[in-house]
Length: 467
Ligand SMILES: Cc1cc2nc3c(=O)[nH]c(=O)nc-3n(C[C@H](O)[C@H](O)[C@H](O)COP(=O)(O)OP(=O)(O)OC[C@H]3O[C@@H](n4cnc5c(N)ncnc54)[C@H](O)[C@@H]3O)c2cc1C
Image (cartoon, rainbow, N blue to C red; front, side):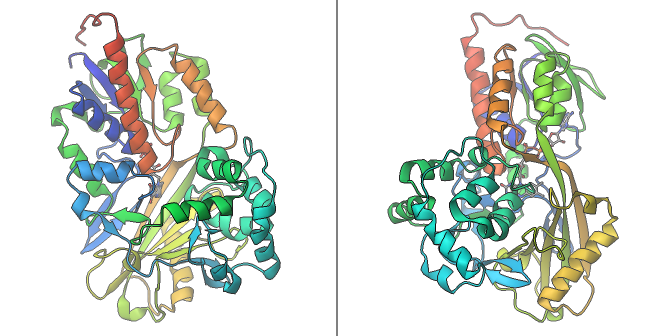
């Protein structure tokens, strides 16, 4: 292959967004992915009329980059909100609804919390007293420490841990508040109280009436297939594992099963531990910094039943499980068919369990049958299901959830400093500046724009080289 403007290594959300943006700017590129399919952890399977989201299942509206990309790709009209009622529950011996009007489990109105059984009376008083807690310094605080300081211990155990650490499959006492929830940190600084800040924000920008999440009729992978269809097929190298890089620019990316790829710039959109291996030969310190970024493993288990076998109503989207609820082996459960339209044939329900993570890494060493049993037993007890599932799937996500632990911002700054000494080399993806599809899309696109700007700033074109 002739030398290209940019090689993008990794075709998950971040790498795909980068390739899309490069293409939009007319830059030549090669997109390499080790897997035979693109999308990384974004994967949707269609089986017997069921639409099974194996990894991510929703796009957050408040971070608009993914929604905007869907609109650019002509998918805007197909974006679908979650079904009503949008209630989410916390499982504390029984399912307790998260009171209405809460943002990330934080109250913006007190009334629904007064009658809620989610917290003890003393914990409710402590939570409401947040407005009187003086400003603190969240610079080096974990999510747990921040919430404990502002809202009290029980809010951490029953709300922050299952909701906020749960999304990341992480440890509430290790995840960085500033890295993951910078708006709440800012809220404390600007208003002196998170509750007051959220209330003020709500008054000026009311919450969307059709919920906070969107999906697509074909599952989240529809975003991937639609995006890939806009790229030149000849630029996509599936089943192409990058082994290492040599440079300086133009860089050579050596791959496992083909000729090396030569590129003036390289965007590494791989998990940070893979990025570490790829850059080791260029900069040992950079590799070490990347390797320090921690990842967690999870599994999703999908189960389908005839609707008639489920004897309790599934109102709302599903539930999260606090770590203190030790008898339940799930981090969360979704009632997929109550959350999204069109995910199962008429007369069937689809349920999804989320397992493993920081809370229970050893669980994942169990065989698929046992994970299915654990998920089935949990759902059967909650929903009075009187038979085994008709359809089961287990999807394992080994080291797929990046952990932005306390110190992450400083580590990424150190990575950027090393990269500034390697002109034309860029990193993106969930391990670095933002987790989740919207942040990966935003960062992938921004990284591609940085590549284009860097190339335009070069004094003279690099001598072309043919590999
Ligand atoms: C189970 C689960 C549920 C989630 N739910 C949601 C959700 O509902 N909403 C949301 O917004 N986010 C969700 N997330 C998070 C979100 O999916 C990720 O943050 C995001 O998709 C990560 O994208 P990425 O491009 O950084 O990495 P990845 O998707 O991990 O992609 C990395 C790519 O690099 C490739 N690769 C690896 N090594 C090499 C190599 N040596 N050479 C070439 N290619 C290589 C891989 O094959 C892969 O395609 C979820 C994550 C998981 C695991």
